[in-house]
Length: 100
Image 1 (cartoon, rainbow, N blue to C red):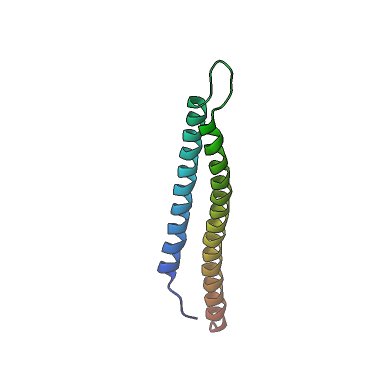
Image 2: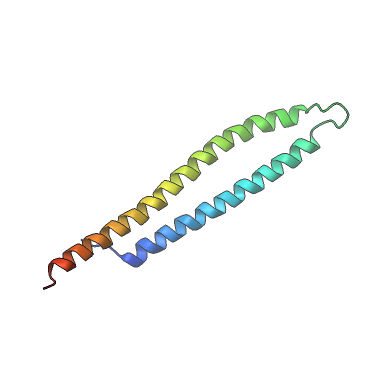
């Protein structure tokens, strides 16, 4: 079986790094959303204006797609790790077969 352990390890680490960066960006987005809600809400009546209502609809769609992206990225990173571990295990079993 031909594979490059260093490349697969680097790929898994890169995917995990990107996942972390996306989580951080999502947190920033939620913080900004909270600030917008505060800015676009009437302090006296507690009513949100039309800008907030429009933004909230877009943000809800973004949240759904963002969640799907995080889930997919996490699954891909896990599968790269799993593939590397299976390859290493297969190598070990084959190597053990030549031991006397």
